[in-house]
Length: 280
Image (spheres, rainbow, N blue to C red):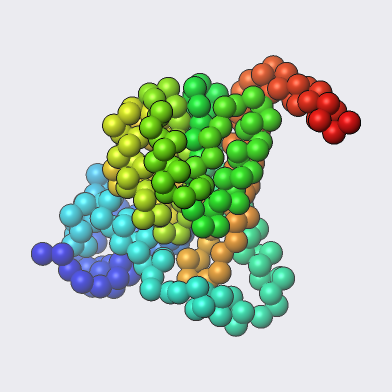
């Protein structure tokens, strides 16, 4: 039977029977919980210097069915039952607002290259360039980033569809979804209620999927071929900005330009010509 209590409570309760390898995994989980909450067992094990099976065994010792359930529990703890008012109050209570914001953002930004290594960004850029069409889905604050990606990818000559409108409009756009298309999902903090429907459609059509997220990790029901760029934004119990995902989105855009510089340069030259024509 699954035991009750937080991950930390479970660890404390079972500490006497944890092996040295278990404790190394525990150290990774508790030292950087926001980052660990989005990492697969393989990466956590690598950072702990143990075999991936050790992460699975630890999860089972703690009463979870497997490592994915442990990670889900860690994500739930980071999100907690903290509403928007509590999160902003926690931030305000720390005082020195500008200084604390800068410190927190810098800390998260420094961790970004480790959470999302450059080869993974390059793989995502390759998927974008290879796609017949790129469809960008976002809800809430993430629509700001969606707008940035839509505009900048279009400037490079990419055929982009904006999926930030009403759910009915999204459904109509997905009628023409094909295997050569790539759906880009921006999902932060808590996923949209329509995300499962979107993922089901992606699986049915065989389209590709790219996810930019923070503590969501690979969404349940996502195809195995999904590329996930998961960048923690710090303490989920406090107010969080879009600084880290904005940096990640910009890195993706630049990686697309670098991967095919001729295409990007040609498209930007064409854009300059069109701007002169339309603004004259």
